[in-house]
Image (cartoon, rainbow over all chains, first blue to last red; front, side):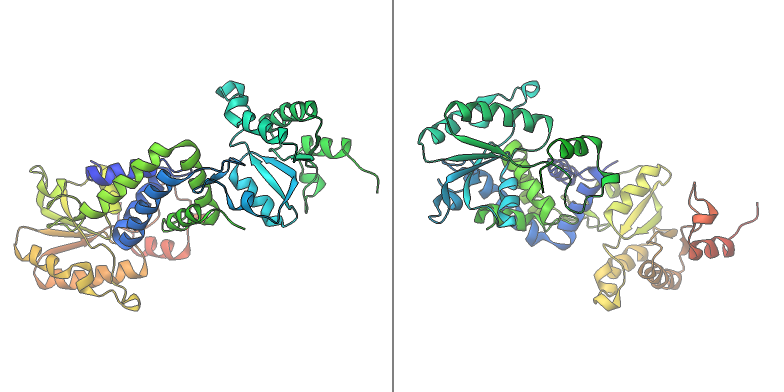
Length: 198
Length: 198
């Protein structure tokens, strides 16, 4: 015994969402069917529209429904500064700090030979093309501080240097509010070796 | 700065799902757009279909896409035993125990005067009609053990007794594996007052 076939299909379909298991999918189904059919219809419509319309920005590769995203189009950004991130969510995180006025390049992933993700999958040709326009004077590598993110940053830094462009990496160390006794050893070692004079 | 308008609408639309806040909605959007567009299309389709087709079983009021649900149609169930529950998920929970062979009546909620939910909203007319067919010999009240669930059970028990039908309430007490020192006072008091000879 289980739910009716259509309820069961909806539960399975909801499980394509990250972090949604069978119990929470069932809870979502009952919530939508019992209390929010309008919300569910709206979700179905917007989801269909988003999936068919959203592609990548021709310039920075972030996700957007127009050929060029709002940041790349903006006349007020500093075009000599290019920040490389792994995902559109990273762009938002950096924008929310309000401290960066350059442009972005979104890799939409990171190098991961074990998963078959090579340089062409992270848009290396677009990236090289962008640098070869010679507008960018500094590239800031802001890939994640993970094994793959570091490897990607290293790979990109070699390419950028070969084009004679200044390249930097965002700082890694103890986060704000971080208490030394609770920080993992790797971060602490990094913070020590990357110490700066005060 | 935020995401593009369409991404932003999809994030808002996903928030109609229970337990989904802005961060997890954004995570879902990127997951769907970057890695699982097929899953997203499928979800949009099934959701639309489910919302337009799923209604209530004519007999037990559970959610299903056919006029009568599979349980009510089944010839192997004991039609003299009727279990009253608050939601379709409760039906599944009881079915999974494998210990109940009767039929169900799903209130699709509970009495809650403060939220304006009265007897007609929990299908009291259907319920009375069902009992007046005189097929049911015992009604088991399995509403939740909450203030509203108890009030609903009390209200229904009065109605059922007035029709001269045997009515029972599922047992409440210490759950399996429950250690006395960690059980709340209300449950423990209930378990003591409802003690049975061994």
